[in-house]
Amino acid sequence: MSEPTPEVYEAGKGMDAHNQVMREIRSRKDKQYDPHEPTRVWVDEDNTPDGVRESLTIILNTGGCRWARAGGCTMCGYVAESVEGGSVSHEALMDQIDTCLAHEADNADEPAPLIKIYTSGSFLDEREVGARTRAAIADTFGDRERIVLESLPDFVSREKLRDFTSHGLETDVAIGLETATDRVRRDCVNKYFAFADFEAACADATAVDGAGVKAYLLMKPPFLTESEALEDMVTSIERCLAVEGCHTVSMNPCNVQRYTMVDELFFRDGYRPPWLWSVAAVLERTVDGDGLVVSDPVGHGTDRGAHNCGECDDLVQKAIKDFNLRQDPTVFEQVSCDCASTWETVLAHETAYNQPLVR
Image (cartoon, rainbow, N blue to C red; front, side, top):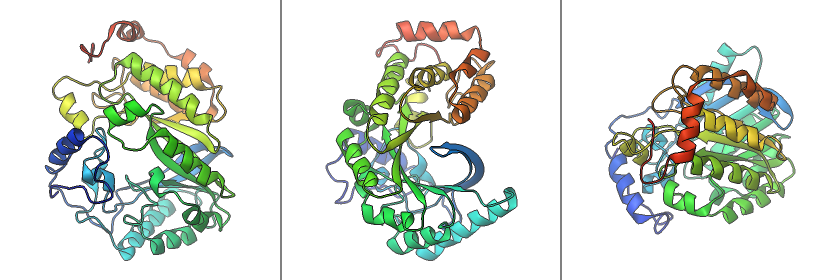
């Protein structure tokens, strides 16, 4: 990957020191990707405001998140999987959609009612996905029930959302807010916008009949202790669900991705992903909020993903997935392990200057 530089849009946003470090780290990437092939696609099931639905999740391979190319978030390495050059043609993106539809036909009994489209950037950023392509994708999935579209709040507009709601699609904007705490988002995540911008995007979405917001939060960004991260998540979930139009919160435990600042810290013993016990604790404490709270710990049970001791990781992960579908906190009463006492010690005694207390 050629060394990225901020363009006019990104200039002066975020923390200059973080951006400078991140640009150097990202420039080490040397793998190339086919613009006609999606990054990933899979069939699964998800909880929605209308109940559990079969889902088709699509990660389009675009030219990459423009904020990541300026430096970007400390934990996000997805831009390293993007196509070199900053843009992908309409024809190539539609080839990716065709590949995803073929995958669905081979792996599902019938078309999924829920479509989730991510770009590891902003689907609604027309530098990543142009207006023509956006309209064509809306036409392609216009007969489904619901669609989720990933975007930073900057690019959310009523006109863009109506491309999808005009087909009768329930349309959710998945916004990577990471935290409701502006200081943590700026200093730990290096994300430039404020909680007020998230609220404004929610207002734009709710102004469109059939549109809403799904907030994505980051459990334990770098530089926070385990207890700080846990409490920040509880507060952030409560604040998000109090915003009109935000009906779902997806809490994503931080995992260690290549070409990121978190990766650099990890190899210097300066970062440990969150405990799965912490993920369970947040879900238990926020279940009574006015909306859905779900979590999908990527890489669970590995050193680079949310993990406990190794013995109980799969059981706790299974309980989390069960919770996602049933929203029943009693699922966590079915799992126990001696390492819970170690986790409790970490919560009580880990401090910013000696973390991680336990790897």
